[in-house]
Image (cartoon, rainbow, N blue to C red):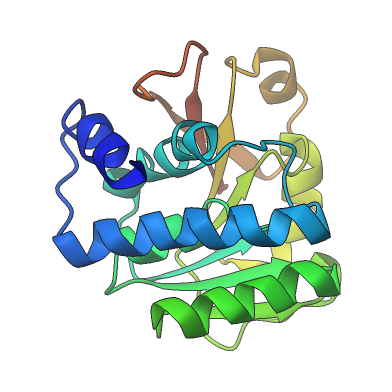
Length: 206
């Protein structure tokens, strides 16, 4: 049933996934649903809703990520990082979270799905130092733009981007960006079957 739902949702986008990638996404939802009962990883309880609110909501970002090294800060159960790692197998994602139970889940998912392009890390974002040059910092429902920039500025240089997954367009947050950071681009995202606004906000260092 989940496989059929995913196929139907994908048909409403321009995103092309292999059969293996689709199977990985379905398996990820099954694992998230199973672990959620014990570890409370997400407030979304039904697998069919996870497919829309988590999988598709993350997947629509994939066409907008050039480069090959990203960090997903405050990844929680791997959103959007796990989904994007499945969709973009040639791109590496560090999945950062401060909670051990979430990182244990991410390690399990990495093993179960054979995802060689993810590195789960338990750390506070302020204390983490990347081992490679990052193309961008991703955040989904993690913090305000100002907090994201304050906490993550050390992770990228002037060629890197801050990429925030937001709901309604965050006009007020953009008006209060700290000095040294500039607004580059907004991208309106269409998530099939989701009756809500979604925007990708891209910032860079001046």
